[in-house]
Length: 252
Ligand code: 13P
Image (cartoon, rainbow, N blue to C red; front, side):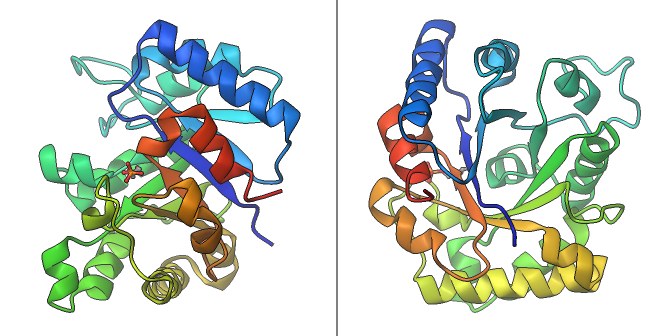
């Protein structure tokens, strides 16, 4: 039985004061109404350490939104942050290969896999993002494109416990559009089948597959009840404590 994971990706949002307020709101909400799911917050790098301190002793985990693909965990890589550095300040998860990084910063499957391998080497859990564009969906390529991403971006040195795959259709991110539950179920089953090819059955069964893209309090319960949906990766709605809590509270 895979434990559900409710994860907030703050993207490039948050300054010191408002982030402390947001975290305090989430903490007090979870104290009042505990949930059964794992809860993860991924603030920008600048806030990782302070958020990690703020959530100490609570059930909330902290992650980063990216790590370096450099072959070493320290050295002459100006501007880069290694997975080891993220671990050092309290992160236990790292997102890699978000579609915004693939599209805007040209990250290939090879780069994403190098990042994911660095994440695992540093002892963190990797959240590898995959997802098709609208054009790819409309031309019937969605399953093939996402299958390729899974096969070529996921690390293979894992028993499945430290790997999470996030299916985020690019056209659903920040748009208010969501796929039908049938489409989500089909895609998640297909991702599980590709993981089976890549990692073998036992490991593939342990990998959590999240859905992301316009998850809101109004659609969370339905999306999270779809078979093979093991949690959610939430952008916009994770920036409001009430919305993030309402999504988490669908998992009592
Ligand atoms: P939204 O929830 O804002 O659509 O963003 C999803 C996402 O990209 C999370 O990584």
